Length: 379
Image (cartoon, rainbow, N blue to C red; front, side, top):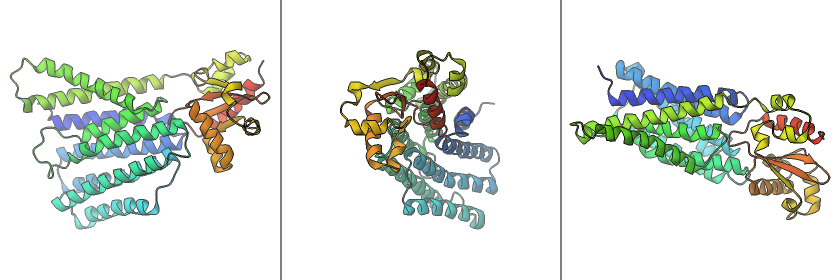
């Protein structure tokens, strides 16, 4: 007995969610952004699993649980967006998201108003407005973040814009006659986008390249079906499953590659000879860095450069404590598309511009501080 296409698509999306949640586990223990992202993966996985359960066992308690999970997912996405731009949403947005989640939970648990036409339209409107609010937060909270964090916010924004129409197609009573629904593809797009952040990358064009690769898998399936006596309505679900399967394979390869990545920064430095060149080549994060000195600092007042050089580690977080110094730091980081500047020498001022990607770990600052002490003292 073959599985219906909708069930197979949900299974593929669930598998992708589980792969991504496992792949980000190490980063989630150290980074608040990654921890929020893992929570979003977890809620998404629960929602997909409940949908599969409801397909096999369509009873009211399971339907209510599906609705509750769908109502709380926007709250988790909002918290993730706040961490990405290091800025709180307005109280109105927070209360609206929390109030909506509580309201749908109340309706499902007490009154049993689950998947009625009015409830479905209300949930679709709530989810769409929540995504719009998240996008507004991402676009409006870009001034005090680094280039890497801006790229992460841009990538997440593009992914959310792509998911809005896809998520709406999952509401069967609003769109009753679609041969393939887009909710599973919305999940895959979000995971493809955030997997780029885990890999230390974060540009929208890279997401579009991933989507093109996945569609390539669907194109191969379409060519294989060309000689079969299938109508367009019969072939479309098969092609859709092939596209989703290609996206899943891409995610498995990416997270498997990251899982077998280089050792952590301090372990790599501990194993390297105590020579500056060897230490800078010991870890990919340092090896990809760009030295900033001399002419690269000439556009800034010498006194300001001297103040920056008093710090072994320069980042956009300086803006919270010293706005003038933080503004110079953010400008200098932006010129080199870096998340941090690690001091190589104080006099003359010499830095290493490092890009730690969109999910830079909180404890990475501490590791880079120690690394700067070791490298600065090396011959």
